[in-house]
Amino acid sequence: MTDDAFDADAYVSELRAKREEKDDFFGSHPQSPIPPEKRDDFDGLDYFDPDPDYRVTASVETHADPEPVTMDTSTDGEVRYLRVATFHFELRDTDLTLGAYRQEHDDSPTLFVPFRDKTTGQQTYNGGRYMELTPDAPLDELDEVVVDFNLAYNPFCAFTEAFECPLPPEENWLDVVVPAGEQDYE
Image (cartoon, rainbow, N blue to C red; front, side, top):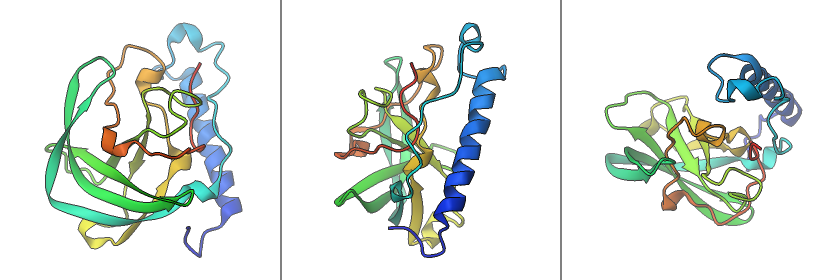
């Protein structure tokens, strides 16, 4: 379900432009996660086709006393986050939830939403994918937010083992196929 004022054509054009910009950054910038010796051959990331059906409106359940969640990392470590909200939504005729997190002592309005779905390890990175969401208002003032799976991206550890990345906790493993966002990097 999407909002009524949504312009799908403009959305797809803007999404494609952002993907081109990201590909340019990954192919040439010194801070790219693509190893320097592979950048000359890099011709862009693989993405699922933009699909506005994977841009959903979710109800927001905020947590006044956020529960700590320990996430495993790609290097067998652990990192703690606070679950500050839970999003409830429908996707592919299935009722789903996703936890939204912040690191302790982080006052940023941006929420970290790591997840796995039925494409994980098949068409997408085997460690899961991430979304970041910056609501237009404080969470406790919102009833709904837009969760856009077309913006799902691979963590930097998908490109090189030089990075340590949090892995999505089991509560964020979706039991549906989400063919949206970035695909696995080869």
